[in-house]
Image (cartoon, rainbow, N blue to C red; front, top):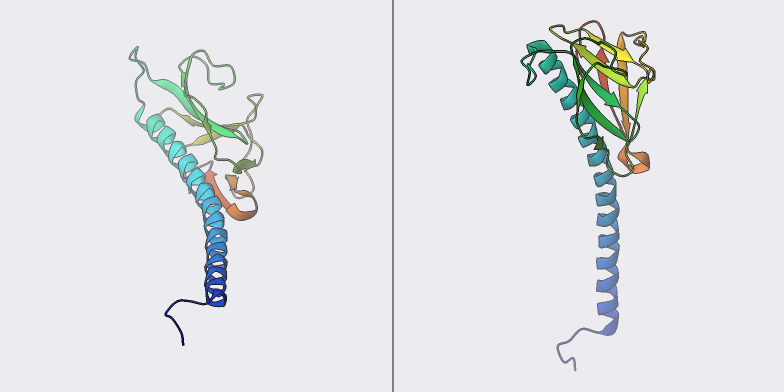
Length: 173
């Protein structure tokens, strides 16, 4: 006669099923985190580029009442950073005066590269046209389609996201 409890075999089977389901859920969540980090980083870069472009088009004034000549975004494999280049020098590598923000680091496992290779994306005052520079401050030409691609990679589980900037129109997608 059965006393109303569960047998040892039934308990072991139930625990094994719970363990298998937990393993499947963890694997799915681990991949989702990497994809989300990649997606969020691409959205942050796109938003920062659009913000700098908007500031250049509206010619925001500095504390002295003068507009900046250019607004730039530094793109690095491990961080991005915004730079406001004051009037008097149009080279973002050696500007006359700048306002620089703290670098924004990418999440662990996320890297960023550009095609063609560049260091700065620069928006000129009152113009939609965008310029690209390498780390020495030399102009960089856009790819054959007229754009520079910023590729955000999240490793094996994060996939990739691409942000494109079209040189002639300044369109960011």
